[in-house]
Length: 199
Picture 1 (cartoon, rainbow, N blue to C red):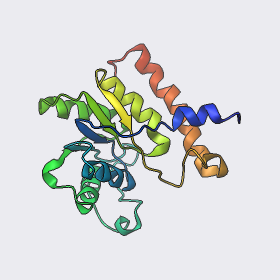
Picture 2: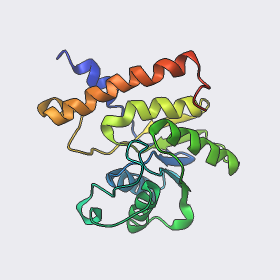
Picture 3: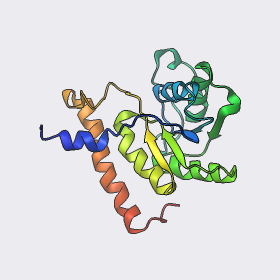
């Protein structure tokens, strides 16, 4: 066993999809996560998709999609608008898409998604989480925190050419994955001591 296998197993969470009440997309500029969600929706795994995301709080606006290439030069005001368009282009009807338009970082994706499902009186017993593969653990932790009674199935998409098989092969992927390890520690440090401090 390579010394980094424990990191790989911790960060790259992935489950077989199972039928659920809702598919969650926690924002971002990579359309592959919406394509994965659309494929699962069209296979009948869930009746609706909740797309979360305004833009990154670090940037202050949505600079636009980074992938797939056909979307890169198109303008969208918010992450959820971009990801919703990808869903529609993949064949998901707009009536099956719920937008969350406020979140500016991952914890807010979970917080505002919960507020949205509560406002719609949706009971989410089982949820599918479609996120970036290297972002899977942190997304799952946040959504489990906000949906403690929900069973989640993580069905990620590989983005930025960073996967469980190849993340140690480039400096950029190493930075992404180890950055996630660091954030899982630094961000959850305060949450664990005071779970309601950011709500």
